[in-house]
Image 1: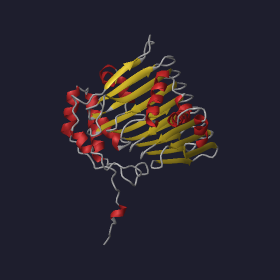
Image 2 (image 1 turned 90 degrees about the horizontal axis):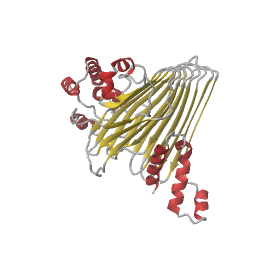
Image 3 (image 1 turned 90 degrees about the vertical axis):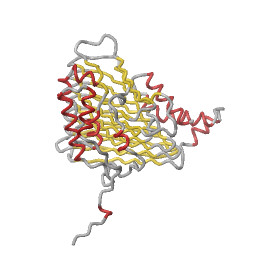
Image 4 (image 1 turned 60 degrees about the horizontal axis):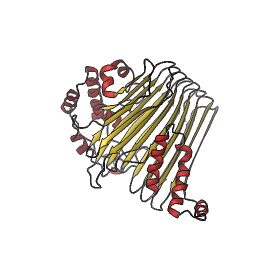
Length: 425
């Protein structure tokens, strides 16, 4: 007789949610899906039904506490007439011919060829993760940006996405495709609109970001997240970087009750470059988890990651980064660093860099630090008549400044700096 210890069984991070085929079909019909999109939702439903929820035996999830998260209740409340986020697209003036910049729902009808080619086919796959499949079932809004070959758009594309204070769910999708030699900047701003009470019911955001860069393309992508403190935020984000292409990806995270973001850059052809920058600040009992992956699949590529975090009160942040160099990816140049600033003794920052190297002619390094505010700069500022609270704010802003300065929009830089200042005080 074989005895199986309960300790060896995978411990789910959250209880599985029930979704029926009838629910998916009704949702699709209410949105007026094309036949192709309706079929994609049903494919995602079948994957979701057969995919177990995350468990603590998975390295990506073993530091996650979702015991209070009521996902089944949230999914049961999804209403196609009431779960659309308010997404405002602000294009640059005088767009060149051939550029597509439309809401995801409009793209489904007006640019079906783009979606059928790129939507969850090359970057994030429905089979990648539990929340990727859930997203593909209920995806509703978002943005599609397509820039044809050799077209360069100097001014940024802007997207403002807002969740109402009483809204319970949102499923937005970002798809960016730059053809050979194209150049663009996309800035996305996610936030909750209106005041949310401390006892407000839970809300769910499940988003996907897909970026495809052709040969020699250049993209600056900025993603700022400031959801209310009742939002559980899950995202799957991946970029596919072609030959000689350059991606500069800047992430800012200050909101939500809980965030779990999987962020990957795949360097699939030679001489590609991925520059990944991030700032995040957690307070009260916030949990912010970022898992980054720099995948060097082709030779002669470069990646550089710098994520900085501050945390106070009883907040918990987790950064888990990995550089993976595939066989044959010689002459790889990769670096990753995570710097954490603890502003209270009860906060906790987990910083876990990693390397997986399967080539022998590479340069790969990493580093992480967790520390507290240094007293010397505080003393210096106070000695010149600056109050302690103001001195703390200035030091924290200075800590984040090298990353925030990489954001191409002054308005976005100022907004993120203002949110950080509120958290310090």
